[in-house]
Structures are given as structure tokens and as C-alpha cells.
Image (cartoon, rainbow, N blue to C red; front, top):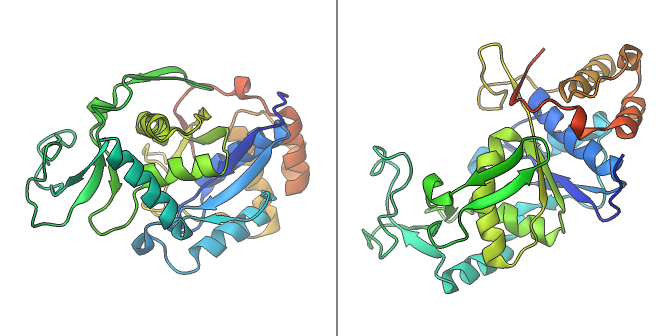
Length: 296
């Protein structure tokens, strides 16, 4: 067990539907990593995209976390209340010449692997609504960091394109909101699925540009279907169980998916007992650095 008394982690779901087994593995990994470090574990609801967030979904997620024993510290943070903080950060990026307005539609650059930066030196169609993008060519590059499971990582953000910070419809995009909120909450460790690993270079650029601390990163394997598809709300992954027997079974399976090798008798234990075992025995070094785990 490694002890970092200043450890602050978080689980930050988008409330587009109930949690599923893939979500459970991400939440459990984040929770165990924080608790094994005697740290703080926060929950943030990333509800900045109302069209994707049906009524009641956030409450369902919070109830699911409670049912599985994943109890958080402090109050839940809701991104829809954070507009002023995001606007302040965007203005800082504009002042530094690192954000620019863009009128281009995805259809216009569909033949390119990433957005080609056509509006970097002036909006192509000033009469149209604009999004705000990050000047990935002017930020720190290349980006290097050490992932706690997958090891040394190097990306040039220019190869990933100029990510959107604020959409044409006025809604905030994920990258800026996440960086601003992680800094505001003092997050020291980000534990999440490996599907977000290639978002890290943009986030590191934003952290440097905004003067935010840079957390450690631990990217976890994804849970996939027999066809190799990531379990997700978009492809109708079944929600987590709500009966006591299946909750125990699913939590035990999530410990196995994280390569923690729980003893078989633990499968019948309560969530509190399973989590206590998981905290005591949590080991990142036990995990195989492979990108996928098959769903049961």
C-alpha cells in the first residue's frame, strides 16, 4: 500500500444514462486507488451537455455508487454550475493567443484526419456561429508523461488537432471543463479508462497554459463485448444490477477485471467487505498493461 496523505482522486461520469460494468471498473479503480492511499475520493457529475443528459440519470448514477458501497467524500460537484470558471479560463487562453474562433463544420474537413486549423489566422466565415479551439501548435509540445500502468507516453498535440474548448451552441467542451475542475478540486491523481489516454496531451497543454497543477495518470483497461466493442451507454450496455446478490457478483467481477485476484469466497461477501479487502490489497503493479478485458 502506498501512502499519499494529500491524494485527491475523483470519479466524473457524464449522466447520459445509468452506470454499466465498464463504468463500475473505472469507478472501482479510482475508489480503491484513493482509499489505499488514505486519500480523498470525490464525485463530479459532468453534465455540461444537456441534450445528452436525460432527467434523473445523475440521481440514478449516485444511487448506483451507493448501492455498490462506493461512497464519496464531501459534496458532489455539478459542472452545469461552473460556467463562470470556464469562461474565465477561456478568456485567459484568448489573452495568451492560445484560443481562436472557428466557423468550420465537421463536414467541411471530413476528408482530413483532424481539423486542419483553417481559422487559426482569422475566421473563415465570420457570418456563421463560431466554436473556440485550442492552438495546439503554440502550446507545449511534444507532451511527455509516465502513465502508472502503461508507462512512458509521448504525443505531439498537433497530430491530434486543435480541440474544441467551447462549442458553437455555447456549451462547454470536455477538455477545458475537466482541466478547470480538476485544478479547482485539487485533484492529484486521475484514474480513468484507457480510451481517454489520447486526451491527456490536450489536457497537459491546457494545464500548462492555465498554470494548473499536473496530476498523475493511471489509465485502466476497457471492458469490451465479445465483438471487441467498448461497453458504453451509446451501444446499450446493460445497467448495473440493483439486487443485492447480483451487486455482490458484479463487484467481485470488477475486482477480477482489475487483476486484483480476490479469493473466491469473497464473491459472497457484502460490498463493504469486498471493498475493505480491495483497499487492503490494492496493487497497480498486479494489473497487466493490456488495453482490454472481456465482459462476462
